[in-house]
Image (tube, rainbow, N blue to C red; front, side):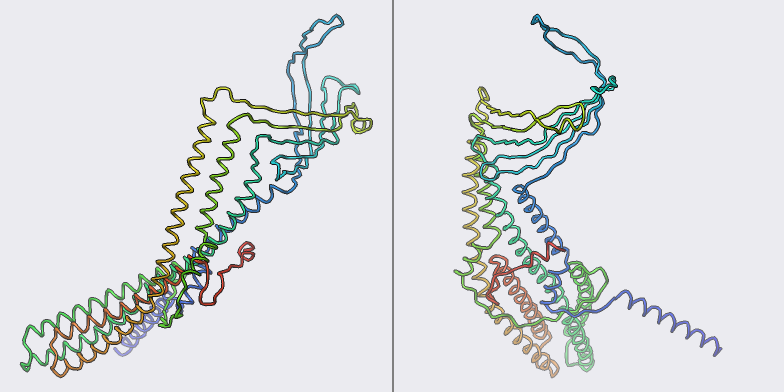
Length: 506
């Protein structure tokens, strides 16, 4: 029997050890974070921050693509093999001046190639290019030395210039740098939004921790008070309704404790997901009651916001884009003209070296394309008027948006400057409510306070603690909101900056 008992105990201990190991593996490592730690981690590794960096990089490469419009481009184009076997109609004039039409069978193999160096002209909107062409045509039915013909243009200078007054490159130079500046400021603002989200997730878990601690304390106190009430009821010092009320309080405390345990697990999971943790790590938060004690001057804040905010830059960009549409539709309203000119050398030979030997023939060409709308049912005119109306709508809307933005800045600054006082009041109320409950608890133990009065003091204590935590969360939310609106750090008194070179190189 002793041997069987020892084996049973050994199995139980082994199973308990394996269970403990599994629980330790599931729980994962434990981290203790402050609010500053959570904000920093959110900016470094949260999915929101990673997506913001990718969006900025996309804007950067778009800006570099715009800049490439004003750099020379070297292009090689070739059609290495074209086979043609068909019947062709040939028109010619005989010695008598009569038109002669004949048909001939074509059986040719053609290869072509060209090398072009082109450059867009920013101040005119045209394009100039320097190129070289080559072609080889082989008559597959002719085996003689004249069966293959080479045609070359060693040098060709070309110009293409619209003459309708609309220069797309001029507008690109106005809009694209502004768009890139908007992307940079928008990235900084998005990081402050990430910080605000980090504040919300931090305090969601911090409030859950406080709720769990309060629930555990209340459960312990309720159990003790219920046991005391049972003794008093047995000796007849309290009535049955007071005992039942204390029993109900005890059961409610146990229920709140269970809900608090579930809630803290949910808030842990949400914070882990937000911070990008893939492991099931345990996070414990340390809440610091200290705040910067900052008063933000409204005039300075508004000046920084109007100068640096991506919203204001976006308003200006949208107006420029609308003005560009007006200019483009205006250029298409009447007669439009395009100038195409080229000059180069040309040579034909039956051998490759002959096609690249002097003397060369000159090759020039100039053309002016003219487009005159005769009957378009006022389409171009209506497009121009539509663009003008849209410009006026956008200007009005942007002015209203800017006014709303300024009012939002004022409201947020005013609320933030008052929040420190709100936090001070909440902290004082928390201290008073805690002392009030302690006094009521001790007085209940000696029978000087009723159960109802004790429950009221207990509820006031919990509500005051939660109100203080909520006011602290509001303070930091407002703090990062002011930073996002102004892109300025009023604690260190300097603009918010980012190392964009590092972001691009990631």
